[in-house]
Image 1 (tube, rainbow, N blue to C red):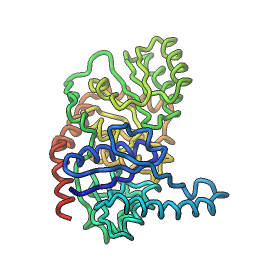
Image 2: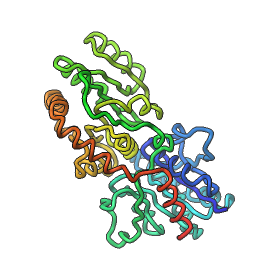
Image 3: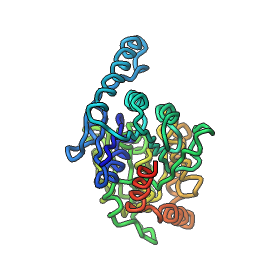
Image 4: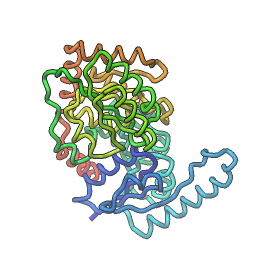
Length: 357
């Protein structure tokens, strides 16, 4: 049986798609994950994973010489880890922590694949792609991929957590009097959403009958939002980042969200129309390009954070609920965009890729 190593780390944006990849392959191959300390908080004990701490060389200019030494030492550790465990295949999901393992795999002639869930090729994956067999991705128009590597693109549908495929989809054909709004800041939360979006919700509640399900950043923001919404008599529920969230949210009318690859893929699959406000400081501006993919397919509303104010966002939400023709058009486009996405099809394509290369 082939042994596959998946490298991942950092935020949930890297780790969560990696877990879906692991689950897709674990019945047919012996699969392991290597991650860093940050990434480990998203991985439970049911996964076979190890920790290799890799320094972010540019995190502190004064520590660059020290971090460079640690980085080269991490290549040696990666080489030793790969040799001891005798892996046949490495799948890199990007992030700086994947580079030492990718370089070590190349030196050991281990077969390498790149997995890019975003609509723009990340810098670490761009480096690894030079010696990879294929790049697994969702977008045939992947940004920043060198022309010479276009032939390496291997398209699959967005790879979701297995349980998402079993959820009931949003099939509502009418909007009720009380509009239900889901607010998601992503795996790292979004302080901007705690502050700015809550003010917009209060403004919106003056003219609209709404219910809010909102992710909070921490306990302090939970208390502040709870008091604010009670004071303004807004029907609400608050939650921490929770991978079971979308079970509760499936019948919500509209999501206001960041645009990490996992969250927009899952909202789309469940037919929940969304307003995307990309995190403007995301590496390679990948959240913007993720949202742009859906906007170009006429299946979401996209707003840059710098263009926002309370009035413009409030007016947009009112317009969305009033113009039901556009609302249901975008919802139908989501349905068309995701109808071919099944767990079985993605699993088969991944297995086929590994056996054919």
